[in-house]
Image (cartoon, rainbow, N blue to C red; front, side):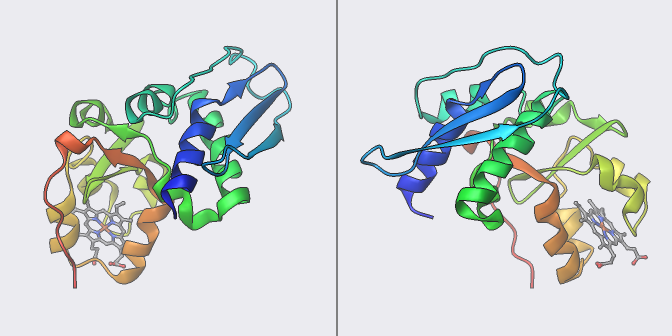
Length: 186
Ligand code: HEM
């Protein structure tokens, strides 16, 4: 994806506006600021989420703050909406390029069966709903809740199907300053 596209998506996130009955999102698609409006009717599901969010920069740190509640509580509704926008405009495979960034400290809070995140190769995965489905058992994943599971995941020799499944649970990336060297798998 081009940097202009990425910039466009950052702008989409940064200008996300939550209103009473719907979510509207303005997306700058190109450097020449051509704009496209996307309207996502959401009924009354988000009844406690009436705040109005508007950030006016596409810089990384503001992008991060605009999406700090992206994956929690009513934030997940926003995430679904943003993913719908990205899916519509760019295709599902681009989701992983449009992700919030988390510090290792943020991630370490999610270490319980109610909220279990782990890191594999600097990507953050919310595996809460996967815990009970994991063929290797719930407990072994929970051990890595809030931590880096790269070595464990790769050393276990997971199949390519398991690697493919990761995309479904990816919620973001580790902040650049908190990244570890990535491990290859063969
Ligand atoms: C999002 C993260 C994970 C996904 C999507 C995942 C997925 C899977 C899948 C699909 C299998 C079936 C065998 C295969 O296809 O390779 C499996 C088995 C297994 N996984 Fe994971 N896994 C994850 C994390 C982990 C972690 C962090 C560990 C820690 C060591 C782990 C340990 C195991 C073990 C021990 C088995 C073996 C079960 C057996 O062969 O009897 N997994 N996992």
